[in-house]
Length: 112
Ligand code: FES
Image (cartoon, rainbow, N blue to C red; front, top):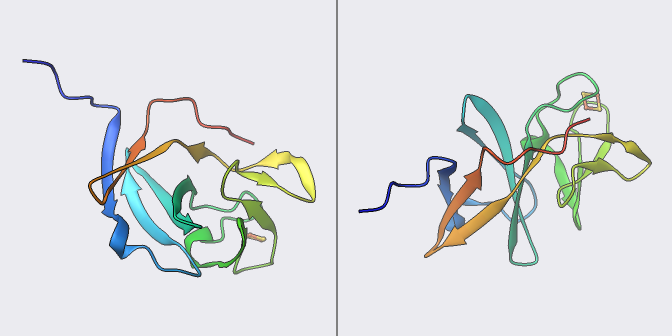
């Protein structure tokens, strides 16, 4: 019998994701912000690189989340700041299977 994939962590049910903001979940000892845009799910670190604002509580505009504290913006697909592409927040691969959302925690996240 095959070993279960320990990198892949269940984090939520797809139906729990709100339409215009994110959902904060815990995986691998980190708090992750999950988003669903145009039917696809994305995962970035919940802590804004500026001063740690909770990105899951930010408003979504297309694929861009606005940090609720000072308004810095982050593309949930890549973790990049559209205004300063060299600035990034960690971004994790997401898979959805039968309505369950999983994050791959052992892939090297894109970090700033
Ligand atoms: S903490 Fe996010 S913009 Fe300042």
